[in-house]
Image 1 (cartoon, one colour):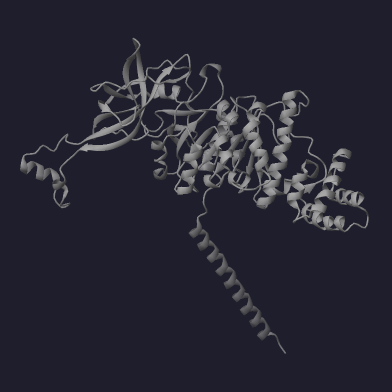
Image 2 (cartoon, rainbow, N blue to C red; image 1 turned 90 degrees about the vertical axis):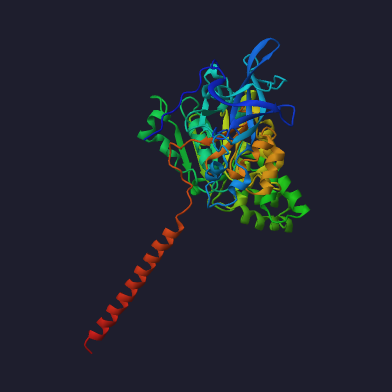
Length: 552
């Protein structure tokens, strides 16, 4: 049964303060924007929770939102009461006449976010802390739904329902991610293996393909993890992904259907495919390639070889050496001679195309990404200038295992990705990078991703890379990462007015990246192997009996 889809807020008219009082302000904190309040131990206020206090700024009443950054016990039972685990501490307290009820209290540190300015559509720092003795309230769920995302609720833009606020009861406080914002300023989904990054990316795809968005998406899938997305077209999902006239198209391209057009390569791509060309080879190849591109949009490997001989002579040793290298690099099924002129087979509004790359080498995956992304980017540039209307709509591409395509090192796809990430906003070309190893990503690429969804990260190098590149998430909230369980995430950056900790919602389509049930597969394989072995022994025995029974 499909979960009910929550409706996005229609505005920001809700009061910030709920009816739940959680504590009383004690004193300022260690930094200028922090304060501390005292709460009973049984009140569940965790790091990342949102609270509100009331104040007056220049004669105007404001409700100031703050985020909890630390919790520590202020007072509890004496340590002597707990020394012997076999004795109930309450019995000791009763014997000594010491009260044991309501004795535990916590000191909570919270950092000001500010009051929401309707005119500026963002938070404004009140530049003052609450007075000691002020009451502190839980923030209202509806208010948080409206103000946490950096969304323009009035214009009806698409908003992705990602999940719920982590520290609240399930489904109490929805978290929406403004699609316009993260698709134009780029997105990073970062998590250790098994923490839910591919699952979360699929949730984003589902949301972007719903009727209110109808995105044009291209997914680079090195492991074949997104082949269950056609489930969006199933009848049981019609109420989610269809509005009567629209149903998303899902185009899963199998490895044997994927190719690279030789004319879409550039000179740098050709050099990368060759094995240590000499300076003379580079010179001959450069002239040959330049001449061919001016002559035709249909180029085979043999055309390149013939042109090399034409440039350097029929008896050229250089052309002969290039012939061997070019045939080894390009004379295979992956490369085709005709340029890709029709691009809407790859990208179109209301269509997600998944390129399953699991049978290609890492180098071929990078070359494919370089050629395709460059072609699409050039088409978007031309469309924005009015020179070509083939791609007169915005694009969004997701790259699973993003550190393969944009590594902290060399890759054919790195240059075009850096270009799109720095310039793509002007041309309506957005990028999503999904990676389990942030430390292996190019630092500029990671820093250009304006919105981040960060899940459990255990590796210290990856944690350091996130701290250095993700400026919007504070140290206090990033410190929670190692303790996250699968499906829990920090969402921060341009698409959010302040970082939040969220629980990712359940997918509407089946997840295709589960880990194999290894022990069960071992048992099944053992059984099959022994059945075959027993069958072979039986057949051999029967054949021997037939031979013995044959008359001489």
